[in-house]
Structure formats: C-alpha cells, structure tokens
Length: 344
Image (cartoon, rainbow, N blue to C red; front, side):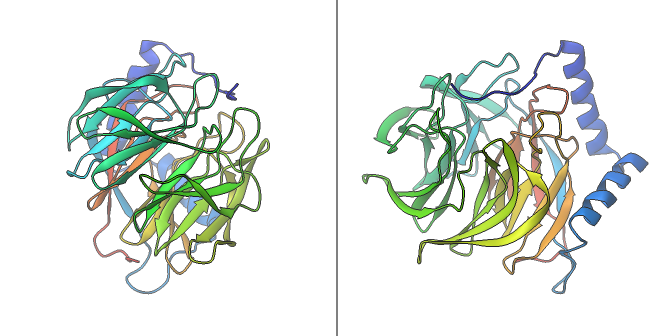
C-alpha cells in the first residue's frame, strides 16, 4: 500500500479562506509576518547566494489561473506548444484522479483522461510528447504512458519495477528516473529511458529516496531532499550521466521532502515541501546555481508541499499542493526571474 500520512479534512469555508489568502498575498506588498518568514529563511540558508554577477537569484510570483479541481501530487510536463499538462493527482477527498489538464497561459481545462486514475507519478517531455512514469493508487504501477497535447494516452513501456513517489528530468533526449517506491520498499536507482528502449540502471543513489525534488542543470541532475526511510533528507546530490557518479553537492539547513524542482535561467529552484511531519510545510523557494551556491529565491504565497512544477519558456508554472491544515489547493502560479538578478 502507498503510505499516506496526511490529513485532508476541510470544508468549503476553509477552501474559500485559503483561496482568498493566496489572492491577498499575491496582490499585497506583504506583511511583517511575511517579512519575518523571509528573513528566517534567508538566515537558515546561511545568507548564501549573494555572490557576484548581479546579486542573488530571485523569483517573482504571478497569478496563473486555477485548476478545474484542487489537486496535489499531479505529474507535470510541457506540451511543446508553450503550454503545460498536469496529469493525475489526488483530490481533496484523497481519491486518485485520471484527468489530463492543459494550461495555456491563463486557463486550465480538462482535455483527456488516463486509462486509470493515478497519483505520485512523474512526467517529462520528449519531442513534444509528455511521458508519464509509474505512480499508483493503493499499489504502485510500472507503466510508462505517452500523453499527447490533446490528452490521448497510450502505454509505451514498463519500468523494471512498480514505482510511485519518483521524480524525472530530461538531459539530451534521455529521461532520468530517480528513486521512488515499489509499494513495499523505497528505490535507490537512477534509470535512463528513451522512447523505444527499455529503462536501464545508470546510477545508484547513496540511499533510497522517495519524494525527492529533481531537475536538470548543465547536463547533470540536481537531486534535493526526499524521504529516506521515515526521515526527510538534508542532502543535495549531483548526478553526472557521463560517469554515472553521484556526489554530494551541499546540505540544506533543514530536512526537506515532498518539494518540487524546476530549472530556469540555469538555476535549479526547489519549491515548497515540508519536513517529515505532515503539517510542516514551507513557503521557501530555494535557488541552487550552477556553481553550487545555495540561496533563498523568494517566498510562496502559502506554505505548500506536493506541488506540481514545470518550466514553460521563461517561467516556471506551479499548481495545486497541500497546506499545513490538510487543504488541497487549485491555484496556478507562474514564477519568473526578477530583472537584474543573477543568472546561471
């Protein structure tokens, strides 16, 4: 069975209040509480990321519309046409969904459906097609599914073992599949896959990991946080596909899991997440530059874990997520680089 230590009982009033808070935070100049949170996050990161070349990397947060329904743990991938696909996920009632949702800039619409409902899968794009890897319901799945921009789904392969709670990223036309959970044991593998081929093991993590935040940077993978056993990890690793070597890049100030990562302007941004406790969500957006510098890139409007994130052009699109009160959200936000900030 997939582990779900989550409480998500909330009424419509709570959802409306949470949505209102997102709008207030997006349209205001912040509050003393927000400023205090940002200052604490900056101190926790050791005030790193303030080097030369234009100063620290910062993100600006913009409203991007809403999902058709509140979701967490949906897979996300670009569709090759300047839009994003959000696939599967969990709704407020803890039910897995089969929806394929397409976001085109300000509006998100259901455009198709998977053969089976799924959550905790991961998606990446190759050649204008999204590929969905694993996921699960009460058990983990091994299927690799191609999802077209118009929502059609077709099975195209199998993972070596069932795997949910995994993460994927693309380097040079290859999808790399990091960690995961078989339904019984966590995984330590890094797999490589191309359409028409079988997945192959190309690296091993120092420890089994679920819910890691993974993104590509400079021809390598950055693997941040995640859950190992019952503990959240502070480690950030770098995987080199050329050598198959995994090395420790840096340590986070606090354990972090259930976060997401995306690359923009050469910098990997690690967004939201939580510690091992289900109600310990964070608003912090971390930046990891190509030279291994860690800094705080800004704050999310709400503390959220289990977001979906994808880079589309010159912005990162994030959607959904779960807050510390157990509410699942439907907001879509876009993140752009602050003008004048350092680029990788």
